Amino acid sequence: MQVTSIRLERELKERLKTLAGNQGYQTLIRDVLWTYVQQKSGDDRLSPTQISASVPAIAHQQQHCAVTGQVIQPQEAMQLGFTTEGMVVPLSSDEWQDKA
Image (cartoon, rainbow, N blue to C red; front, top):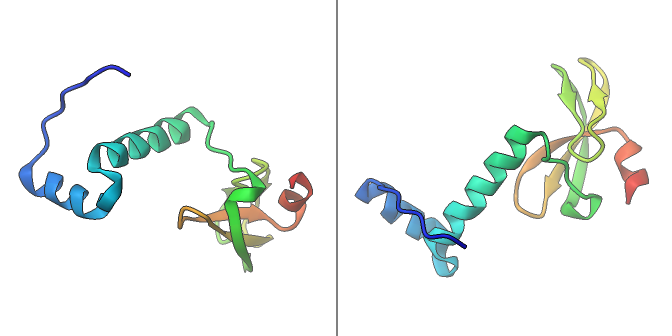
């Protein structure tokens, strides 16, 4: 791992420390940056094991299933998945479960 210096406002640094708790704010920043890179590179698909619960929903705009990448059209049945990291993600109705 390389050392990189970044300047943060004092208030931001303090809030990051509070959010990070025992994890440490530098680890939190790395996690946030990796998530950003994965989302921007299109490599942000989740494993079915990362979904802790889901509830039925109807899409109001086009979505992409967080597990399969399948397009979910407006007015189509879908699931809202709750991840083990606390995020809410779109899921195609049942197709994502076949990947488990």
